[in-house]
Image: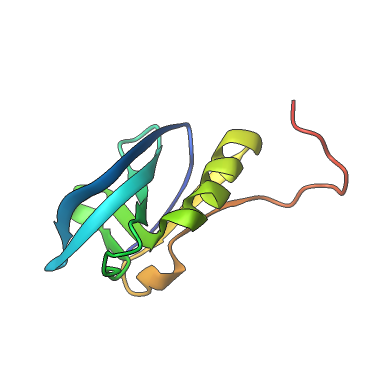
Length: 115
């Protein structure tokens, strides 16, 4: 089992329309994505899929330092909002339970405003 947790230090957002790719043998149609980067070369990619796309299984490939989740495009903006508006943000990747791949904040006080 490989688990990696890292603070997201930077990110990239891309929007498109039915860009094709293959993950785990599944041909997907990507409408947008968010890539979260660590300082030591790890990436967590959240793919927002076109409504006509099949949804590939989440994955974490430790040797490539990359994890990915595949979600409906309409849900991608929840992740983008978290990356843009919270600090710090952490990514969690799990090779045995990739369904647990996620981004999150740490405990924050009620009513805290970001600076």
